[in-house]
Image 1 (cartoon, rainbow, N blue to C red):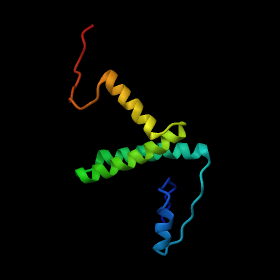
Image 2: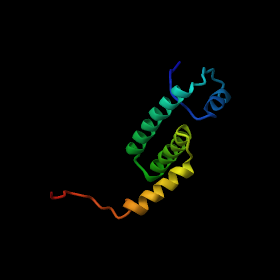
Image 3: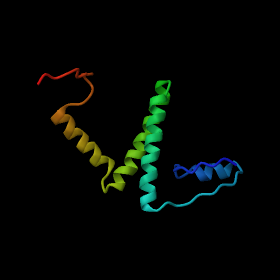
Image 4: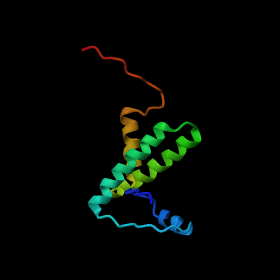
Length: 107
């Protein structure tokens, strides 16, 4: 029996049960949940970095976005607030769409 010990999406246990498999889950405490969200974010970012196609990359980015939504809530905020902050930063400092790569700055 494989051991996973990782945070999964809410419907994964039901999907596994429908396959006729037995499983064990637990509900995490707030502190454990926050820690596991961060661990899962790192896992999904790594999967994005390893994606070999645009389709796979977009799927991994969707997972990252879902985790960002959950993490924003953990910080007493929302994904809408994160988007507001992103827009403010883009207005003040720009975005990344012009592909600017800073090589060096003379003192």
